[in-house]
Length: 259
Image (tube, rainbow, N blue to C red):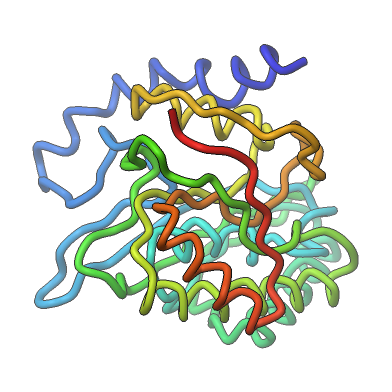
């Protein structure tokens, strides 16, 4: 099963990465298609902007937390979300239900949906979401810049449960993360989504050329989407991260070390 997840979510996209790689030459982004990270990052005036698109989500996920899932790709790179755009397809009633759910999530997370595109059609209802954010750091936090000896940590609870539970967990994670960004030097980070820890760690290891030693007894399933953050930092910075997380009542789980 692990090999199937890695093939589906990582290796199967290698050709697409290579096919579009020359696009970076047109704009020379700070973080672009060749980086193949959670978000792209470009300079915009005296600011640096992050952008990420995710989906198409099934209606089931839209009714719970699709906007939150899309937003994590910007937040984990060190960005504060500014706004989102959506693309909806389905029958009029299905689109209406998805739109109502997205609006609840947007108001709760204070991330406005300012536009998008809608198609009424008798097909399986789906939704894609694009999120734009402002980088809060000098440089985005990449997924391949960890260092030997770094502590591997999962920050935040898995974003599971009802919509209300997922919103509360995301709010706690984001609040904690924004304080961590101000006070802790993070070497690398990524949200744990498609393929769970198995595909996430495989991709990060392959891109960095480093190997990870996992601790025994990890309390989370290795193949399920968690949507919390896997974070790499030195031992000293890990201790600072832990103190902030404890103060915020945000769970931190040490799961390994970089070899």
